[in-house]
Image (cartoon, rainbow, N blue to C red; front, top):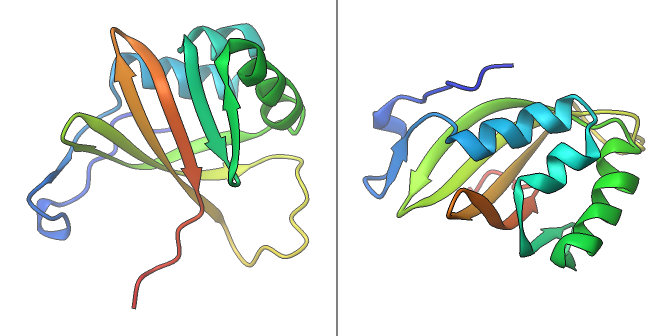
Length: 134
């Protein structure tokens, strides 16, 4: 896993800046890949929210259930492929793998994670499978 992936600036609009994972996001990725529920939940603020597959999980208890069932339960791993800063928000693209249903997937599953971080904790995470714009 590469926590320091950078992309050429020529591919990025001027409001997006290639960067490396900030510490709490590096901890988050490491904890996900270690299947460590407590460590994953510890990266979130108590009142954070996650939106995954158009479902919203609000607060530590709901996030813990989501992590336990859908991240650690499905043995999800992340391989970071791109990290950019956009006005302080962190956009992290990663190749997902695990023991989830892959029936209709063609090729690698690349998901975009939009993170907001405040005081060293994740306050929001939005997970989206983006398709290329034409």
